[in-house]
Every structure is written in C-alpha cells, then in structure tokens.
Image (cartoon, rainbow, N blue to C red; front, side):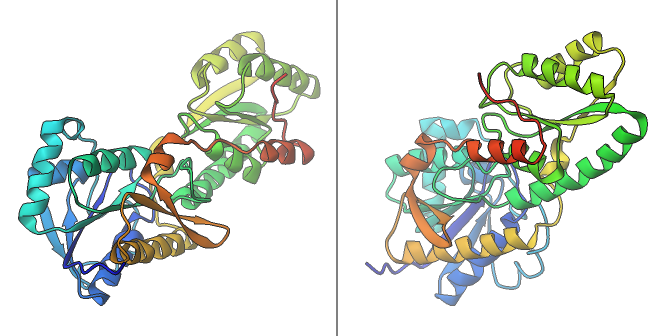
Length: 331
C-alpha cells in the first residue's frame, strides 16, 4: 500500500559508525525526491525527549558522505528507557508533525524503536549501523568494513614492531558478545592466534600456543575480542609470569576503530539502505530493519533482529587454521 507521507524524522543512536552520514544523506535526498520534508533529530532518542530538531535539505547533507561519525550526533538516553521518557518523545514528534521515523544504529537502537512502536502509531524503519556486524538479518552492517580496514592497518604496524623485538602482542579489538570483528580482522592480517567470546578455555589454549612459540622462539600477534570471558589483561598478565623469555605487550585499539572516513563499501551500503528505508515507509512498512543479504534488500522485523544474535562463523575458524593462523577450537 502506497502511503502519503509529508514529513520524516531521522536519528542516529548508540555507538557511531563510519557511514552513518552517508545513510543520513541517502534518506534525506530520497525523501526530498518524493516531496517529503526531513527533520534531523539531534543526539538520538534523547533528542526526541528534548525536542532538539533541525530541518534537513539536500544542501545540508552535501559533502558529508566522506565524513566519519554522525552530523546528528548520538547519545545513550537513560530517560528514554522509561515510559514517561518515551511519552515525552512521542509528544514532541507529533507536535513537530513527523509522521514516520528512520532510526540508524544497532540492536539497542532497534529495541528502543520497538518499544516506541508499542506505545504510538508512528511507523518506524531501522538501518543497521554498527562496527560489530552482529545484527541478525543482514550480511553486513554500516561501519563494519571501515572498522576492519582500520584494524588491519594498525595490526600491520604492530607486527613490524613485534618482529623487530621478538615480542608477543595481545591486540584487543571491539566485540562484547561476538567475535566477528576479531575473527575477520585477525584472518585478514594474519594474526597468529585469535581469541573470541564464542569459544571456551581461552587461557589454556593461549598457554599451549605460547609453549609452542617458545620452542620456535618467534614473535606473535594475538588478536583478542574484548568480550572474552577471561579478559585480555588477565590472560596477558598470567602469560608474562609463565613465559618470561617473551617481551609480552598489550595494545588496546579502542575508539580508533569507530572513526575515520568510511570505506567505499560502507558508503555504498549506507546509500542502498538509506534509499530503501524511505521506499519501505512509502510502501506502508513499519517495525522493520532494512538489511542486505545475498545482494538483495531484506526486511527483518525488529522483534527478530533484536531477539536473534549473529556470531562468528565457524567456517572462518577452519579457514584461519588452514592458512596458518592458530585459532584454538573447543575441545
């Protein structure tokens, strides 16, 4: 069913991801092409509550496709988690004349959108943007490809230092519940060991690996997802005490993984999903996330996207082992 919409609101929420600006640009320009006004909501769901809105035009989104971060800014809102907070947001949206919303972010963003839809009749469509790439219903999320490239670049430099001084580097990358980032970036840069939350007994397997490395007297780079149960720091400190022949160092890449100009792939993905989000609203869709799978757009209900979780593919573990990366598998 074709729905006549006069005004769309757009916000970015949760952690920023390279390519969010490209998505904002695509949503804005597609809406304008369809004679729909666009309102930017500053600082995510908190902006709904405070009523911090700005008008977006084709001119205002010019020259942002190459910029990292988000021009609409992002914030985590404790108040929005309450019924009273969401009620304020709904009142401000209706007062502004916003008839539909496009939300850009990760699973937390979609949970917020799902709760909002339970309490109002405003159609909402989501665009997945998170460097973790852990959203169910899409092969890639906006920001993931840029994140991988950033990590690989940093790892190449760390490896140069490690081999020069015969050091063991534990490099921690983002990934609370999923090892997708660690697994794929580790594979891409030839990490010698990859530790991810999906596996158990990481301490013992690290000990076994370093015992082998000690006999070979070789430097190593160990890629670690921040969400592993034992903790990067705890494992590294124990290994320092057991393998005194090695100079063991820890490097936490931190927020550099979120920043930087988005890759071509992220810009293209953001543009595709941004255009489709507006088309979906015009068709009368609501309560869905726009994903991309097998080269085609996919509509995934919020309820499924937030209930299901995507983890590191075991096939990549086998690939890593086949080409020389020691990736311990569960016993």
